[in-house]
Structures are given as structure tokens and as C-alpha cells.
Amino acid sequence: MEPAMGRTPSRRAGTIVDREFAAAVRRARERLGLTMRGLAAKAGVDHGQVSRLEKLLEPDDEAAPPRGVSLAVAAAIAGALGISIDRIVRKTRD
Image (cartoon, rainbow, N blue to C red; front, side, top):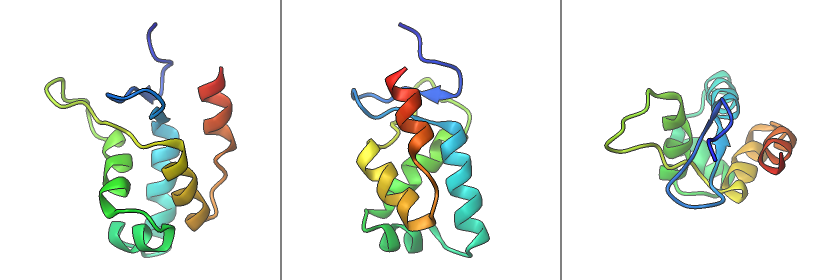
């Protein structure tokens, strides 16, 4: 089964987060003047998780495709930024 447009599959099941959400995270983070490390601290996640999420915005590298993050991590990051995660949950159930 091919992933829906706008989503980047990860290497593990259950870690698909779409690029639209990743872009919203980056915009909100930059608007708030937060670094990736600052956002990670605020969300209570490792800074590598924030980096992995934002890597979804980069062109795909066939040798090392982006891994994405779990929905739990995405929810923590979204909560720290005040972004709704509802659209991700709806899209992953479709």
C-alpha cells in the first residue's frame, strides 16, 4: 500500500506524520523564537525527535529516508506549541 500524498513513511510502523504538520511545527517554533533544543525541552522530548520531525520537510534521500516520529512525540511537540494534532490522528486512521 502506497502512503497518502503529504505523508512520509518511516522505517517502523506507527510513525507516520505528515509534512503539513511538520511545516506547522517549524512555523510555530520559529514564530516563538525557539530552537529545536528549546522546543524539545518545552515538550519534554529529546531534541533529536524535533529534528527528526523537521527532517520530513527535506527532500527524500533514498539511502536514508526520514524516520518521522511517533504520534505520542508529535502530540507532546504539538502541545508545547499549542498546535492541534487532530488532523494527524484523522489522517492516520483513514
